[in-house]
Length: 203
Ligand SMILES: O=C(O)CCC(=O)C(=O)O
Ligand SMILES: [Fe+2]
Image (cartoon, rainbow, N blue to C red):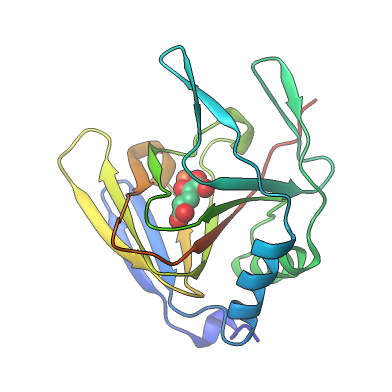
């Protein structure tokens, strides 16, 4: 069962140029643990490569992208089509869209098999996400550090995202700040993160 968002007080941050909200334990047990197990076992996890400074590098984690059929986007001339919704993820997507009053039509899932899997500094500011996207991020499994830093000032924030926590990266986050999941070599357990997004359909 998800507790109604209105019944839980989020932790809120008003950062310079960005706002963040964090609902600890948004997804309760046993749904959170069952969901983690099921998605790790059932999804067609992939390790695509990304091009950095002219060289191909496999991403240091596993990934699946899913969403509505219309949520495709064009990148370097190729049209990317999301996988169909897994029923569990579709259910969370609907609950999140209703609770946050945001029309999410896709989700990027990242599976960090241990603390060695990670994600470097970036912002989710691709054109297909529109002007100032609101991204809802649900974490399952082992807690991991989530770092934020301002693009132009020496301001940083570190959060710990645990099992069932929901982080909403709202206005300004992608424009003015970067975020990452750093390596934590002492973490041995796995973690799943789902970022719910709205993709402006490609024409
Ligand atoms: O794993 C996380 O908490 C962050 C994921 C993320 O930044 C992304 O999918 O763009
Ligand atoms: Fe991101």
